[in-house]
Image (tube, rainbow, N blue to C red; front, top):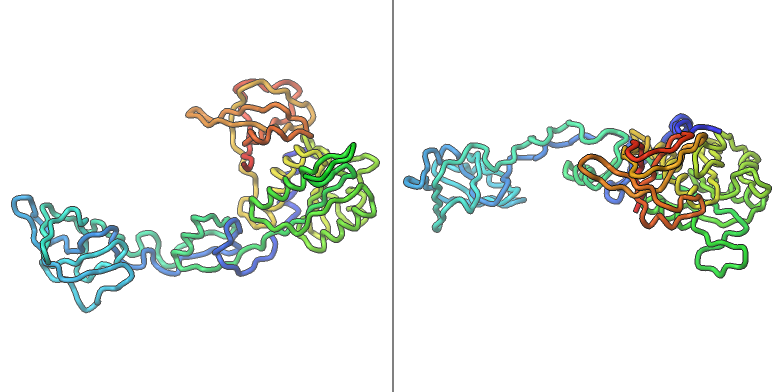
Length: 405
């Protein structure tokens, strides 16, 4: 049996990112850059107005006051998207009407907001001076052409996509999205909504895994329900690897008479990396490589599958996706009640967190057995309790991981 820390570290040691491809940034949120991107142009590309108003030379407003306002003649207009005539420079004592984002006309170096002037026909009056550079977005003030915008391994967020688009990038080299195939095993497992005969149970794992992948924008290559038959499982496992980069299975991963996943993987040439992790729930977890492609065989209890997805599959996918920092985003919080420890295994408990000024508080929920999922309606966190023979007490600091809601 391998420790949880060791198990999570194995994935980065045994896997590598999938091949890269050139793809449009639009529609690629969540994907990872395979190459760094730099600004092809200055941002902003030219000196421009930060608001609607009047572009002028600051020197023309020197000494302006309520008693002696500066008077300027309005001689033109600069609208966003329309460049002012390069040959027409604004002369002393003149100004241009300008809109937000419009290029500053030659001869101007400041913008005064329209509500700060008095206008009559083609003249404006200012009762106070305007400083040079006021309300001006200067060319290159955000970045210069050639400056780095995003490093290789950066995950595309909506904000990063917007920043890259503004710089003129429409596509990039991105790591390919992993394709995931899912096998749900168990004679007793029936698809949700079906009439259940005596001894049967509705499948929660298939919907859980499908929804978990959908939340990450990942394609589901296939999802199959299988009986506890060695031949059927072996054939389905081979077919799954023919169409997917990762295979996830539920059920049949332990040591019982009907647990066929370990033997089926071995028969297909799977190289076992570890089997059984010192965690609760989810101890009988198999991680094997089939010609470099990972198999994660989880036990069948839904809570164990949730832990397997949140910790193990998330770690595997981060490596395959090429993330610069593939580790999980653990944070710290304090327990609000006593919780029993386990002397041999790490406990992973569903909890509700409360963020306060003095830190995050973690309320471990009831119904933590591995076959129970009813508390997921309230749970927003998974709390990691390292192995301990005694209890954890209120105020103890522990790591937690956010759950998808």
